[in-house]
Image (cartoon, rainbow, N blue to C red):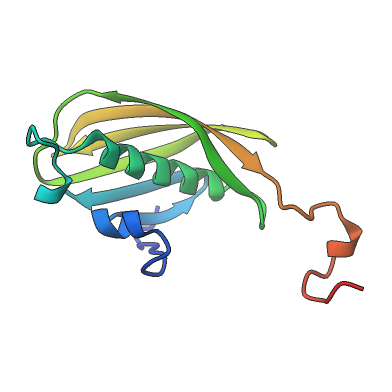
Length: 148
């Protein structure tokens, strides 16, 4: 997998910008993402807030699925089950997401989260696959032309 970073324009996902999330080029139902741990991302106990980890996992899972979809299709999270295994206090947090099954309407994805090379969380997610709204509509064959 290429290590080229795929970054949306600043402001596209303000929360991802805030946590410094890097998403590495998703392909073949896989995606990697990472961010540096900073003081403002810690909870009052001095460990990384679980919501930040969840957001990275959700983003990587969605990107992994999107790499398998037809042009114009999208996906949305139905649910993600996270298992937090160890606290994170510093360093860089990374995740590797992998599509387990991608059907016409539902996709199942797993992800492992690491910090300092150790597994700190694992997740499994269910996503809805949303087909392009005009798929199968003969009037949409030339989407660039105006409607009659």
